[in-house]
Length: 53
Image (cartoon, helix red, strand yellow):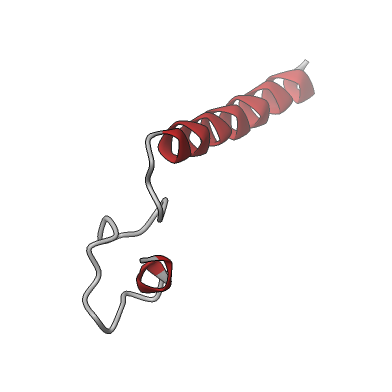
């Protein structure tokens, strides 16, 4: 029974992550998960947002 609960929690977490990425891409975000919201300086923040512009 405990195994089913753990599996259900993992499936929910993965499902929410996939939903977040899908909605973000659909809304036009180029750099999902960028800590600076893709407003990086010219040097960049290490997330390669500046390469996508």
